[in-house]
Amino acid sequence: MSLKQFHIVFILTAVTLSVGFAVWAFTRYQPQGGVLFMGGVSCLAAVALSVYGVWFLKKLKGQEN
Image 1: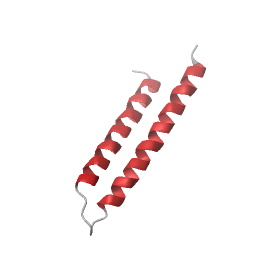
Image 2: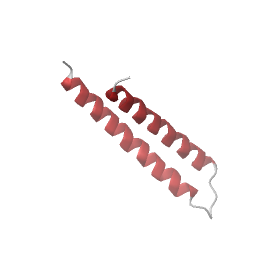
Image 3: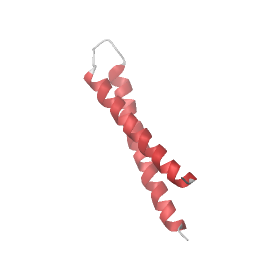
Image 4: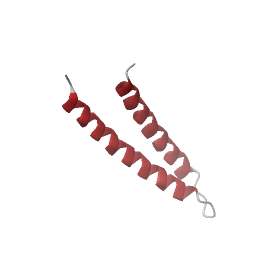
């Protein structure tokens, strides 16, 4: 597996784990805890990682030889 392929798999794994944690956090919501905040941060991380993944794939397309 090349470094580029590993990077793509790593980003997909990170997005999947971020979304999974957000779902878990939102289902465990309690008024006194900070779980809702952590779920929101996890959602933001998933969006940011997705944007980065799309940017990385576009960058790879331009470099194909």
